Structures are given as C-alpha cells and as structure tokens.
Length: 92
Length: 487
Image (cartoon, rainbow over all chains, first blue to last red; front, top):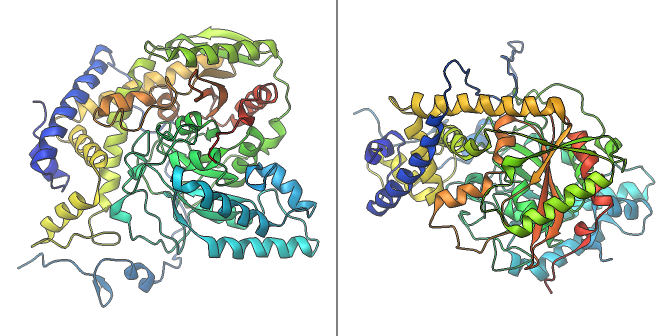
C-alpha cells in the first residue's frame, strides 16, 4: 500500500468510514499505479507549468472599496453571534 | 416549429418581428420542462417568478419600439455552479444544499445586462467532478436520446436540457471536458474558451488553473452569440486576460478554403468505438472536400494526459475545497464535540464519494515527501504537452479529433471503477492542461442512434478559427437538426 489513508484523511480534515477507507484505498492504489507511467519520461531540466497562459502579478491601487454588507455575509452562516461566525470553543 | 425548439438567433428574429413575446417564449419553455423534465431530470431548481419578471421587461422595451440585443428575452439555463444572487447555488453538493449567494458571478451579471432570461439551475456532478452526473448529490440526469444512458458530465444537466429543448441555450463549465463530453453525448454544440477568455468570478472553484465557463447550444451560430455575451477581461478575476474580444459572429462565413487541419494519430486510441472512428473519419473527409488542407500531426504526450490531469486537478481541488468547513456558509454537521470533529464530520456528511476520493488523492500528492514525485512531475509533463501543441500549431490552424472515445455509456456502467470513468476524458483533457479553446459539435450517430461529437481545437484566443471550421461543417451536414423523441 502506497498511501497511509488515515494520515491523509486527517490532513484533509475529512472523516472516512471503515468502508470508505477500504474501497478508496484499493481504488487509489490502482490510480496511483496508473500515474506511475509519468516516470517513464525523463523530465530533467523541464520547467513545470502551473498556468497554461503566462501569468504576472496583478496590482491595483491600494484603495478601500465597499465590502459586502456584514448582515448578508453572516446571514448565510450556520451559526453566528453579534458580528462573528460562531464555532465550538477552541481555547480552554 | 414549436417555440421551445428554436435557436437563439431564430427566437431573436421572432421577438424583433413581434411574432412572439419573451413572455410567450418563457412560458413555452416552462411548459416543455413540465412535459419532459420528469424523464430527463436536467433541472435542480426553476426560477419562474424572476424569469417572467425579466421577460416582461424585455417585452415592454420591444413594445415601446426600443432595439434589443441578440440575447435579450432569450430563455437560458445555468449550470448550478454559477453564483446567482438570491437563488440557491448548490454545485450539485449537499454541502452547499442551502447556499444562497449574496452576489452574482460576472457571467451572470453580463447576461443580465444583456437581458437574457434565466429559467433555472441545471444538474451536474458534485463540484464538477465526474463525466456522467452520477456524482450529483441530488439525482442523475438522463440522456434525452436514451433515458437508460448518462448525458455526460459534469455539465450533464446543461447539455441534456439543450438537447431536450428545455432551454434555448445553457452555460456549462469545463475543467477536463465537462462542456464538450456532455455536448458530444447529447448531440449539441459546446465550446470551452481559452483559459482567461471568460471571467471565473462567481464560478465555484474546482481546479482553478483549468476551469472555464462556456456555452452549450443547439448550433454554432448560437455558440458564437453566447460566447460574445460572456467573454472579456474582468478585474475581479486576475487570471482573466485583457485582450480584445472580437465579434465571434464575423467568423461564420461558410468558407474554410486553405485552412490547415491537423489530425493527430494519438487521438484514435485503442478501444475507440468503431462508429465514433467512422463518423470522425467521414467528418475529416468532408472538411477536405470543403477545401481545407488536411495533414497528419503528432501530439506524442497524449497518452499521459489522464495521469497529469488527475494529479493536478485533485491537488487544486483539495486546497479549493478546504473552504467547506461548516463555518462561513453551507452545511454544518450537528454531531460534534469540538472544532476538529466539526470540520471532519461536516465534510464527511456533506461531500459525496467522488469528491472525498479526489480530496484524499489531492492531499496525498501535495503532502510532504510526495510533492516532487507527483505534483512537480505532472507539472513538468504538462510543459511537454504544451510544447506538443505549440509545435503542432506551427504547421496547422486547427486540430480535429473525436470528442470522446465512445458514445454515451449506460447509467451505472462505470460507477464502480473510477479509473475507467477517468479515461472517458482522455481526448478532452489535453486542451484544459494547455489552456487552449475547443468546440464539440455533432458529426454523426452510432448504430444504436446515439450522438457522436467532433472536437475542433484551436490556438490560444483563436476561438474564431474553430467557430469558422465548425460553422462550415455544420452548414454542410444536418446532424444538428436531428432531435431525440421524448413524447
């Protein structure tokens, strides 16, 4: 097995059922084996492409612009209090 | 011809001549949806009240004798990945099942300015991950040509709705073929623009270096009209490109004399359906007869496309989808003790299997110790693939291939085998990896009566040339005029 699926799931903050761990494990093993064909190619000195169109940093003037209204943004969140998103206690 | 069967340009002519009102057209489309969507299941949500409000406004203008643009009053459908202010946008996912955006995406804003009518939101594979709509968190859309088959994906709802005359045209999105493959499966026209041609602002992100919005239409002229309506630079999307947008209708000349057409051997893969190969070979013969110069070319890195793609798209997806954590919007699990558990359960309950599989794969290929072996390696081979196309486009103006290796497959046929499902996209993926534009249009039918698609690929920002070739092909064939029987 190439992948420690429990470790990866933890990194991804994704709970998996035992059944999922089993089937994904098998399927991903097959997919990763398929991907190994890339190793047949010698890519020494080849620059990686992360964007197909040449990209440069885009700058704009540092001017304040209106944001979305707070009540609209908070209004679609699962839980909120005053002007904040509400989550379970993080710090004891 | 019934109103729901019309194209954009046909309906526009009738609106201008005051033979039909936009309200009548909108009502005709909703009637059609009522009649056939129980079978096709293309829509996730209808927005009738707002559609009729928009239609009445356009009709008032026409009555007053004001001129209208060529999209005004035209009822279209939207893939449910496009943010619509005040209307639920689910992305085919339970995790966004209750998400109502407070803003419009740029393409929605543009189409509203052009006074198009929005009929509703169309089904898709969850987060655009799939080739069949079987990964939708809500239901599977059926192929109007054979209800036991998939409509293609991920924009399967859009392609099926256009094919079944449940909208005049639709928008889809394409990350690895998600406009072209369903267009091919459903016998309609679909175009993926050059990366950066159309703003992605308000498009729910899957793989940001590959995603692009594009038209799905009944013919090539409509495709040019809708592309005109959505193209252009947008300061809100820093990857949109600030170069002039031509009027794409000017390329619809029905003249392709001297256009150089490249045929890559590598796209006629082993295992290709013989009916697909036959139709595409006949299409190439026709292009030759119409005066194009057809020549063989080679794109040697084609066999690596699927491997590169499923490393890059899953890597990008795993980081894009990190935002669905139950905090700011969307679904939150009710079963948790602490924050970490809230994240993990929310994502476990909110995401479907394919999305989870891709998040795991993407997280793995980006994780410490594996990044170089997978992500960096794939990005390097992506460069080699780009070089393939750059070399080819020195010799030819467009490249012609099949859109998909087979016609639409049966529902359920590939669900248990993700790798086999991924291989459905092998002929469409290279275009996304290299950022170039491509169109799929009908070029025949299989012995079982299923549509077959022809893919025409162009250079960066050369949508005009692929529309020119597509239009000439369409003018000299009648595949696009055939319709499925649903009633």
